[in-house]
Image (cartoon, rainbow, N blue to C red; front, side, top):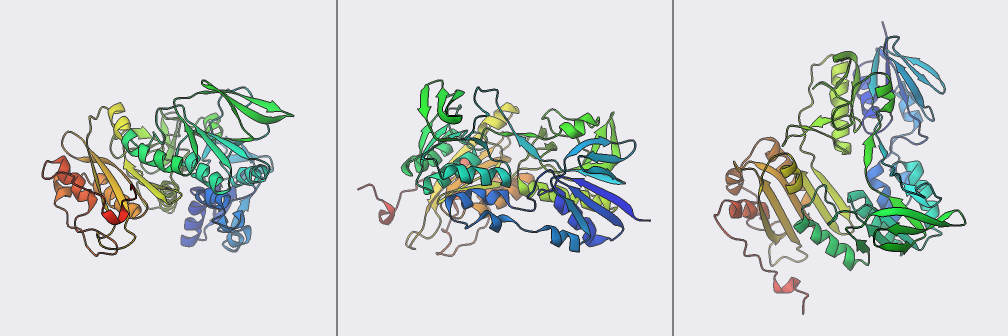
Amino acid sequence: MRKRLVVIGAGPAGLPVASQVRKETDQFDIDVITDRQYFSYSPCGIPFVISGMIKSFDNLIMRGKKHYEDMDIFVHTNTLAESIDTDKQIVNTNRGSFPYDVLVIATGVKPFVPPIRGVDLKGVYFMYSLEEAIELERGLKDSNTVTIVGAGAIGLEMAYAFRKRHKDVIVIERSPHIMGSILDPDMSSIVEDYLLSSGITIIKDTEVTAFESENGKVSAVITSKGKIKTDMVLMSIGVRPNVELAAEAGIERGVTGGLVTDSSLRVRKNGRFMSNIYACGNCIEVIGGVTFRPTLSGLGSTAVRQALTVAENILGTNTVFNPIVSPGVSIIGDLEIGAVGVNSKRAIENGIIPKESIAKGLTRARYFPKGEIITVKILVDKNYRLIGSQIISKEGVKGRIDSLSFMISRGVTAHQLALIETSYVPPVSSVIDPITIAARKLIGITRDKFTMPESMDNST
């Protein structure tokens, strides 16, 4: 007998569940519900469309409705899920009801909207969907000065994109340094210097208190340090799990605000994990692989891995989702900024007093042309177990972050890392990798004696 699978959400968690289940079996009728018009697109590519590097938002769309219909998966766009009845096993929407045997909640996140006067003015944007990005692009054409509130990775990627469009860009950050959720101050200063050299203004330690308007459109940002004239504002101050629908159905939230699940990603209601309702993506809380405490992950790669876990469990495989260390890389202009595990602030907040080490090196042999400086920071706990790393360069960051992700999740120590074998070939590496140098410094084997080669020294 055929069963009915209903998925709420058509993002990087919801659609892979539907696709993977269909690839393995034809015994499910599959409906995917989304309140959006656009789906199956890459949100990570939006800054590159804004900058002009990618020609059109259309290039970000991976699959259309017909692709899924050919797979016997029905995606219902502009369909708002209004309630879930877990007793009758029905999802009620603005376009009718969808009965289910198995339900997957993949409702993602929503932008945090602060209670600031004027935040709803025309010209103030929250860009967390393709629809919103398209609206922002339209507004950008009539704007000369763009102000970004929030100096996280997305806000700074957008800042550089606006600058590439020859806009005057101002970034306002309430904290003492930028990208504070993933970088320590000494590493964030590298990114800040790069942005300043690109002509972007950065104002730190500053609260936004209101927005002013002229003719119904935003015209100024009022801050704790004065008024800033602007033509457009992008709010980039974080997101919250979009869980109200599930919560109204009695599904439990955790300390982070995300939905609570077991290791198989089944949700909990009235203290009991439900056998036929799963949740995945950034609407759920997960366990951090360093702190082993609940946390949230906004990474698309995490969402896809969770989706595969859910699909396998729907298909009858007993699969668990392990704690995460969240490797991520942001691209801001020519700069690659990578982070994995926890930074110093997050470590201390969780009762871990970190030891740290920074090393600089070159991404290629000293004599090989076009090599770039790479800065590596590693953090360990009191037992010298790796707990985090931050790496910044114009090349060579992703592979190192990925390798450190594996090492952190496996409990590798700085002593082990200091003795690790790495490959060497002049066009892509130095003889001793900067990661190894950082580990050796940490355990006292050697010191960082990096000196910029004359061919790269532009100070004179």
